[in-house]
Length: 109
Image 1 (cartoon, one colour):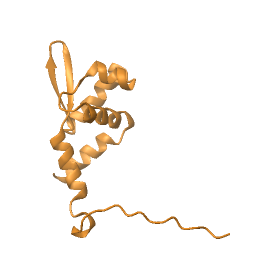
Image 2 (cartoon, helix red, strand yellow):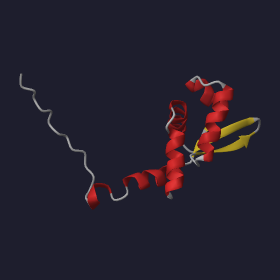
Image 3 (cartoon, rainbow, N blue to C red):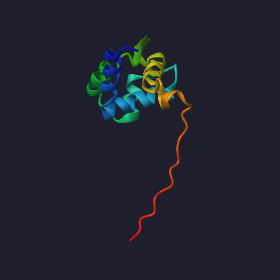
Image 4 (cartoon, rainbow, N blue to C red):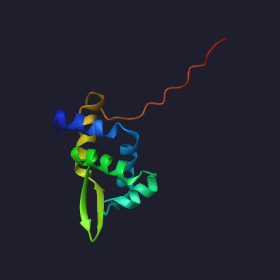
């Protein structure tokens, strides 16, 4: 994934409503969700949702399709995985990445 695409995707996700929409679509899976259902679930008015969907689509994070009179949006899992791959590329200097549970330091008074 190229740096410009990474920055565009991260910028699109760096807004509370768009992040919530994207996470909801990831949970919905490949079948996606209608625009109306997205707005209803997240409490986003149609005019605002339209703006947010345009930003996510521009970043390549969502795609849409027409089904009858409904617009169905789906997360673009390929772009999501490319973004995750870019962010974790060469993680931990080539060593397996494992969470480190550091013991809390006790504060002495």
